[in-house]
Image (tube, rainbow, N blue to C red; front, side):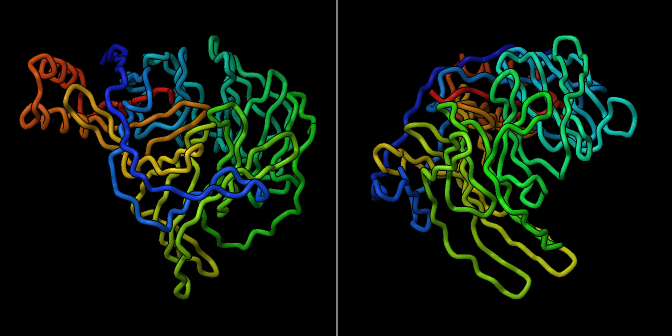
Length: 386
């Protein structure tokens, strides 16, 4: 199956301002915004077309080497990297299969579990750490060459950010023994600085949401620790609180806890996007589990202090509407939504039969539907926040 040509869609819809305002925090608090999600807000579809002017649909080539169950990874102009439990696959920027980077195993250049990874801005190198290994792989995307960079492993990592050509910013797992909330390390393996903390003893059985540690829309690093309602902006070794989120207090019943989590998805000078999910968590002496229920995204204008919308994300294409509750905002201003081919085909066929489409829209929908097979790789829709 050949990749679908890149589709560029101009923004065609705008968000309605609900008029649900919030009081900003005082200057003395140090916070620039507070979002109260204990309140009820009218549900309104959040249309991706209205957020971006450079959206494109990517159909990842499907063959015996590149078959994917879901997509997690990097989408750039020149390369796409899909990380799976069993393999890591490299595609061109428009979805054509190039090669398998590595497979799971114990042999040379094989991996056990990749816990942190990053791609440099020029898309020259893909860096990744395999758990319990005293090195970080530097993989040259153009040639497929591997090089080992020294690294002292002291437990799982959560995130990796490339600061410049010689430095990483690394976020350890909450219970790892690095002695830092986060730290900076050179490619030569030297820890340069970090925000120190005492090691937290692992309780044995624990379940919780993953932390947020990534570049925001204005290139700063933002950090929301696991189980925290505070969002920080990182400046060197300083963690400056810039925002907070309120959710309902959890209800505890013996070994079961029912509640809500609120996780930062995206942040820039104007816009905040929060993902709120219900959860049911069970923790016993020897086991733990956590299941997420309904997920809702909230768009908040931090300059005006108003909620702009809440609900699921939608992508509008020639009269068809694709709905997705789990849009990801992996880096800076980028967003990524993925859809299973069978779901897209179902919606395209529904729009052709029941929608109010023009003849030209129907022609485009039929052409797109014919290019997608039900057992193809996930379809990706990506763009940048305008």
